[in-house]
Length: 392
Image (cartoon, rainbow, N blue to C red; front, side):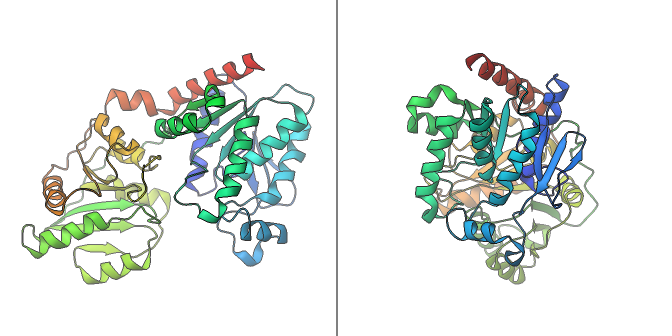
């Protein structure tokens, strides 16, 4: 498995490869992981081989010249170009063995490394996309031509390609009908052993609703905040009876809004994962922010899996029919969705309804457990591994 980000790296993108590797091994598939590291030499810990890499948050002045050049030109969103040849040096130790590659992106440099390894060693290759490449609203338009070329290259050479939502898989099959049989869906999910669940709500004179995690790009709570300003201003709700808290980094407009409303808190400070989990588990309700300005939402915000296991009411800003909309609809957890096409009165009605929901913690549905539990997902990935092996 080629995954630049891998625990204990503190990035959300490290969680999926870790879950899959963990449960694949329990299903009897030995997994060696090549990941990013800080040392010039290869550092081996159990089954994880770490080679020096430029991480996403590494300051520009500390990046190698080649890394800086790539980030300034063709790969502004993708670190790790200088890590790619180091991956091949590690993989060379297994050159005489029968291996199968699984690469997971972003960054897409993991797929570049896997493509090189496939050409060099002849191993079958499964390319896992945690985010789309072409059409990703968080990638700049100036990279589109490069993204289109690389995406086609990956689809052409990989033996299987994994989308993490059914919406993305449908889009790919329409875009690449010649490779439709290669395209599989394996949703993001959760580790049943991480213990996330609802916690007792502390005694307080108001209800607390939280979004836990960074706020960036088009994932923004303005539909909700504008409604709350209207409802509190018209005295339909009491601003002293609630707190809306955004925990994690955010943009300047959010910080400015927090200074203007006593019921709103956003300090832009990241908190450790354990603290973030505690704050979410002790909330009266949870806020989910999805892409709302694109033509179609293809992705599923990762925090939805923590929210649903906590089991408290969820208010989602999303688009109708999105993966988030559909998953919430079958989750068994009380929820409300705000859509950008809703009229103001409809949004206000929905927000009032949401604020009236009880704060009891509810267990998610059997459907949710069956489709998003990492144990079951590793079984599906194991079946795909056997399918790929049988074809090559």
